[in-house]
Each structure stands twice: as structure tokens, then as C-alpha cells.
Length: 484
Image 1 (cartoon, rainbow, N blue to C red):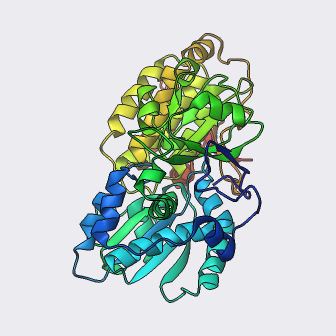
Image 2 (image 1 turned 45 degrees about the vertical axis):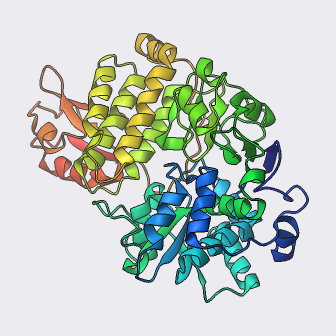
């Protein structure tokens, strides 16, 4: 979620999810029903057939067919739960927060429709604890008088908080991190019950589909992917917004509407997505297939134009460090591999040609080996920078810089107030014992003469204890921990 605010809403083509929002800040129940009506009840098979007819897919990033999820849970004999994933841990996304704060009844309508179809015991709406969305949707539940059927749960916001397993754990009162093994929500989700889990936009789309019918729903968009999609456009855009567009709309038209240029490149799909070079982005169209054909992925509909005034590699490194810190630390690829990837990226920024091969090797080393998809997504994001910014890489290797500052165009959550910690060496004492590199191989390596080479970057939180232990064990008392 972009910190502390929801950007304006814009439309390119007919408005569906955002209909009426040009005239009011937030739609109450009366305004919602006047604009959207009320969806008729359906059986599970009727609803699944309707979703199949327009190939409705999840809008959280994975694009899993909604009808398949519905059919997987509808025949379970146990009590069932509908879980709405509105826990927008992705810093570059605001679409779900926009839905909950401005048109919450559309999300609730879709969730209740699904719950009625599968005879679910309860609807749970999971959103960011203490955020605007939590209070807005709670007020909408009260307004409808469905507090006995719909429960709003605020969870701690982290990048991985929206991952399905992590979300279920949070709702169940456990630590919000991936469970470390694949547990299908349709088998065991909220309170161990079969759970229909999908993203907030998915349920809003379901409500629109049920009221319009498949034929009218497919009046806009492409034949293969009918309807509209919500996009969060930020970055260097002068007019950032959540934009509703018909599928098939050219990407450049979306950027124009938000007063953004292709610049050095465009990030699509968020921080588990990838960079597109301007030459690819200029011909891309907004749909899953259109973005895939251009060499990217639509994901959760995140579009971040970089502009021309910031260092692309420096921006990528900032996010790589953030993603390494957001790891739950359950497996080696996350706990060790992601800091290594961030460190290699930082060394490339500082002009190391050797770090290019190190980065590729380290990224390949985490692929497919994590307890969840966080290592894969992080690896994909970082490697995409190598293809999108070859000229910048050459500049950094030749000159140690591209000459541009890092302006923080890619949004990240506000940093905690903990001071940065770095390792330093008192060279008047260091005798080249080499013990430090053995004690802290993730922070220190030795040069050809056996003396320590330290990263210029701040020490990640998960390695601070290791750093202090290494300082305590230095035979020459040469290592120091510096803060500030």
C-alpha cells in the first residue's frame, strides 16, 4: 500500500468497479445499490458457470481461475469460509485499499454472493490493521447489518502478509508468515475449515459480473480476457492514480492519463514482477497476455514508470534490500540467498563487473528452492534489471556511477527509527587473521592478501547479532560496529 493515502481514481473506457466514484468520495449502501443494484442469489454451479463464461481469474497476482476454486470447495461437507484477501502488503499497490475505502459494498456483495452459493458459515475480510480500509469496511458491514456473517480482521502489514498461507495463519491468530509447506486453503484454511480464498478485486469483479451477466460484462475488453482491470500507477507519474481500464488498452495510454513517460523503463507486476525496457513497454497492451507478450507480467496490476532522473540500478538495489529484510527467514534461500542477491546488486552499482556473474549465480541458486515463492519473485525482479538497463550497467562498471542520484521513486514503507549499523576496521590493528570472514561469511570476505573486505551497506537486521559476535571474537580487536 502506498503509505498513508489512496491516490485518485481514473477511468479509461467504461467504468465498472469505479462507477459513481467521480461524484462521491465513498459510496454508502444506498449509493451502491442505486449504482450497482443487488446481485441475485445463485447456486455454486450457476456461479461457477458464470465465472467460466468470462474466464474470471484472481486479481491478486496468480490469476488462478475463480471457477476452479469455487468447485474445489463447494462439494466439501464440512463448514466452509469465504476469505477476502485485502491485506495489501505490496508497497506499490493501492487498488484493494481503494476498493475498501471508496466502494466497500462492492467487495462485500461479491463475497456474500460466493458465501451464499457454497453455503459458507462466514465471510472473513482480512485487511491492514489500523489502516483506512479496515475502518471503512467495518462501517460498511455494520451498515448492512451483516456482522453475524461477515468478520473484519486487521493483520500486521508486511510484504509477505498477502501470501495465501501467511494470510490464513494471520487470521487464525498465528504469526503471519508462509507455513513452510503447501497447505491448500480449500482443504484447511480459516479455523482449519475449507476456505474459498481470493483477492478483494476478484470479489468486486464477481459482484459486477453477477449483476451485469456474462454478455454485458464482456461488452468491453478483449475476447480472451473480457472486462476491466484495476491498475495502480505510481513511481514518476505526475498524476498517480488507481486506474480502471478495459483490457486491451495500450500501456502508453495509461501512462499518458497519469502524466508519466516510459523514461528508462517501467516496472510491471510489482516487486515480484519485472522491469520492461521502453522499447517493449511502448507496444504493450494491458492484459495478462498483452503484458506477457511484451516480456513482463501483469500480476496485481502494478505499473511503476521510472522516469529519467533517478538511477535505475540504485532503485532496484533499494527494493532488493527491502525484500531481503521482509523474508520470514524460514529457509536458506530466503535467510541467506536474498541478502546475497541484494549485496551483489549493490556491488554492481558500485562498479564491480565480477558481481554480475555472482548475481546470476545467486539468483539461480534460490529459484524453486524456497519454502514459499518470495525467493523466486525477488530473483525475477532483480534479474529483470539486467535486461532492462544494460547501458546503465555498463556506465556503472566503467565509471562507478551513472551520474544520477537515487531519488526513491519506487515506493517503500516508512523506515523504522533503528539506526543503521555497519562494520568498520581499525587498520592500525588488523593483522589479517581471517577469522572474521569465517565467523561472518555473509558480511565479510577476504582479499588476495587475506585482509577483510567489508560491505559498504548497512547490516540487515537478521545479521546484526552475527556482526556483534564477530567483533567480540576478533583477536586483534580491529573490528568495530558503527551506528548512524
